[in-house]
View 1 (tube, rainbow, N blue to C red):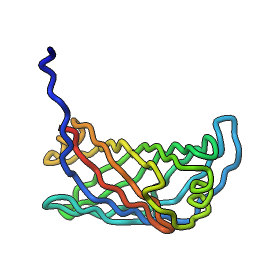
View 2 (cartoon, rainbow, N blue to C red):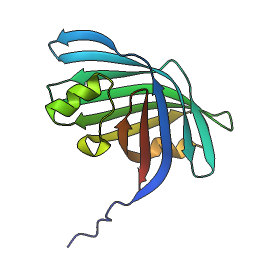
View 3 (cartoon, helix red, strand yellow):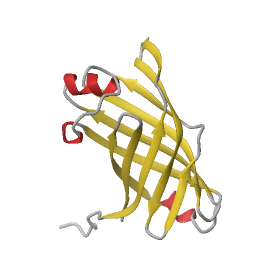
View 4 (cartoon, rainbow, N blue to C red):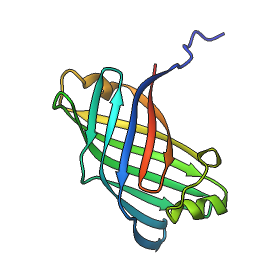
Amino acid sequence: MHSLTEPVLRFFADVSVQVGMPQDVGLTLGGKRRVVPILGGEVCGQGWTARVLPGGADFQRILNDQVSELDARYVLETDAGDMIFVQNRAVRTASADVMHRLLRGEPVDPAAVYFRCTPRFETSSKALSWIEERVFLGTGERRPVEVVMRFFEVA
């Protein structure tokens, strides 16, 4: 028997990211590419809040009718004034019909979509430096004008 500790998920934050109209790059050798501008948003953790600064983007690769890889990069500013760079990679899968509706910006039943992510954080804040030393997982939901996610620290 191994003495390895089984991972436990601890709530880290709820995130709401407002997004703009996707820029369709087209079909490339790596799949269909889209860039979705990040316009702003908010974060609420236990005892802290932050805002999502405008200017980031979600770089998407649509692999086929059912699978998308997402790579969102943006900056948070906490209520204490600390800055956090976020790179959030995700996998989003659904049936072809649901995925087509989702890509057109239509509302879909979140239960019909698998959306899991692995956010990574970078910060110059001494008080928050611990977040650079941890693994985080998340689950998400794409809505017509926003993406909502819940992040967990893997303890």
